[in-house]
Length: 209
Image (cartoon, rainbow, N blue to C red):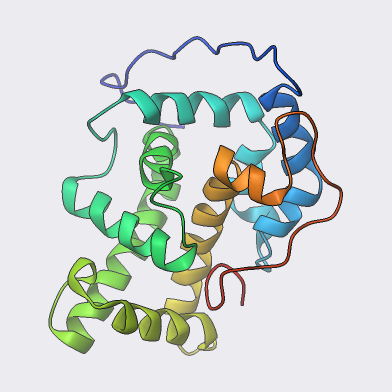
């Protein structure tokens, strides 16, 4: 893994004393039903988010850094805005759950290969927007974004690299969303316990195919 000397030092994790500790809930949700629900791509075991979700301490620390750090650690301003717009289009609610800043913190300490793959996927959607509509992804209308996402999520992987780019970003974004407090509560965490049954998907055309 690469390291960034400009990253803030790890923030001490604050123990939770009320109800079911959040880290314990993360372990239960993401180690079982949660991770299986969030990451359903055919390359699930190979995706770095699968590995990261198995370590709740890393997830929680990155979320805490994202909550208190105003500047980005890895992405530039345009990339950050593009990620935020893509995340919201793929999993509605991602902006409020701070999926973009959280992923920025995770990517800052990921391997160079995973960083390149992520930036390649992000850039591919920006280029698709420019090719189709003559403007960057962040200024597309919601219907224009939805049409490009539907195309990318249904095209055969052999005929277009966009399917792979979509699956890569989807797994990063879905994993980030469902490891946030917002996503965990959607999966059934109440602060004291969590439900064994998962709620139905409420994001048509979003994180699931």
